[in-house]
Length: 110
Image (cartoon, rainbow, N blue to C red; front, side):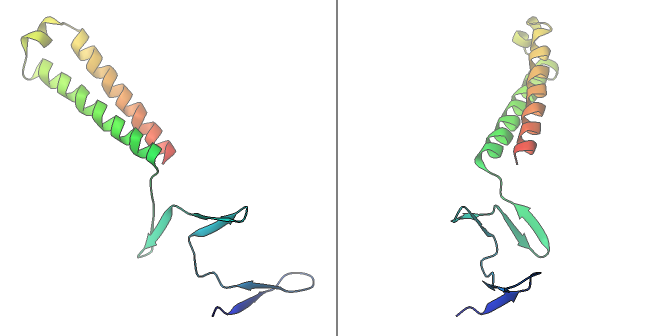
């Protein structure tokens, strides 16, 4: 059985509350909602939601694609990439800029 705590306030009567054993649950409008963080050894971590994971995945995929285009053009020197001229590295740089934007969006939404 949980013990009751008396919370002192200015004024009368004193408010009797129950001890908080379920730390990590917040009540909002009468419904319990799980707070997306946990602490371990005095370090707190937050759990990323699905939107942040999608942004980070999109960022990683476009960065790998842009780097592979630059690798094909300047390291492997594939004839298709060399004949394309400046459009190959330009598209690769646009992919890398998009990857940076998706990374920023993932950091903001996390």
